[in-house]
Length: 635
Image 1: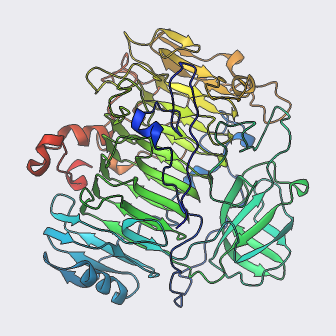
Image 2 (image 1 turned 135 degrees about the horizontal axis):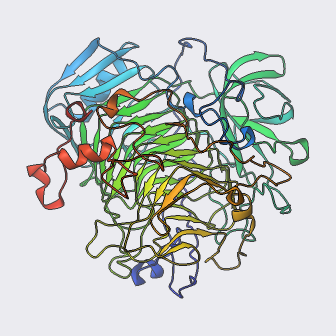
């Protein structure tokens, strides 16, 4: 496995050394600049198996019907987030193919998964399983690994598995797609408009229905002030790391629905409005990779503390799979890694900590992915809960709770805050973050440019857990250079007594827009000029802001008309109040919300926060304040 580093910037605007996320270094980190990143080449190839498409996937030809955001957001700046996650939802499987008891080895569990018929469940009874190797689904589809509950079935790992070069304790994989030298690649010659579901390519040899395709095109050579896809050091501090072909940071993952000669019907439809022939658009894929889908991990606890440098659950080149009702403890790099995968659902989980408090310690890390649904999760003592480290389009992140930012740079910068939402790489577009309760959001300009991100009805207030609370890098919404066409709508921002500035280059500002603390990167006035702000409440002004001057209605491209109403929908992706909200008011956060527990009544506690607060401390982890977790008792 080849490893490479994110080169460190030498100084911030405050004169302090930083790492690859703009976080201050310790002297030890500075002296050891190499850090592990996802491999360019796998350790081993996956094992092909026969696969039957279990039902034709729905074709979603862009945004063709009324959306909940209609009348607020322009169609050019949003997408249909209601289709994110497992197609048709997570299946409720009831047939058990195998039941194992504490004392079962990793090999025995893996054998049970391999032998399990499609649509059935490998069940792990209550108790503790001490595992000296990782669990792997190999190339198996449509199998669920289920415990008796995250407070009853405990998997404790002392080692993991290679997972094609991505260390993991649970590996769900098909086969790695080599970005340097894809096994299959061709030109893309027609079909570039937003919403297009039929594209024309140079060759379909090796393609198969149900397979994942990677669409890409060359980066832009010049900045015209609108969409600017760039990952070089002229627009970033360190250059891009997104897994893809060289100088092709824009990427969208799609699935093949129909092949007719050189025309391919895909799902979902195209999102970015800048696909064009002048940028030599292309397609690449792994024709030998089995179409792995429909795998799930449910209702168990996995402790990775003793499995040094191993991650939690890795999804590698798979689709329509999920993690639900899981407690994760102290992985090496991330709790969940979404790598070259799409339509993954991560719901009703509790993620605690990591094996370090460095910048590469993540909750959910996405890296060449799209159309995922991440909702109703708890993140405690995690450095970066939602970290977008590679191309991702069309994913929805809803109602996640984050507390206790675990970052101090080993004591060198105890006050430095890592926001809960981090846009960190080229190729990110059309992501929705809705209803979160946590620290804040940051687009940095360390690795690449991003476009069309939406923050809706979030309650962001900085870090209040640590003692003392964080006081550096604490801006609530911080969009640095080249984070363009953002939509900031209906949020409740700040906390009384700490934030003092509505907008400016200050740690105590609600908004910092278009600055660049990175070396060689210019400030970008287009960040503010292209941003839509509508219906946000902040504690500095104690005002619900509905200002026409904060709506980019005059842009020559991707303008947004001033909304005709100050009424906001309850959600941008949910059609109705979800059952797991229980008796909590819906919507729970927003300028018109009254009677809430926080921020002048505009924010109620979301279900994930209530669950965390009401869950008891696990006696086995009392010193770390880790909760016993059972979502069935919470939601």
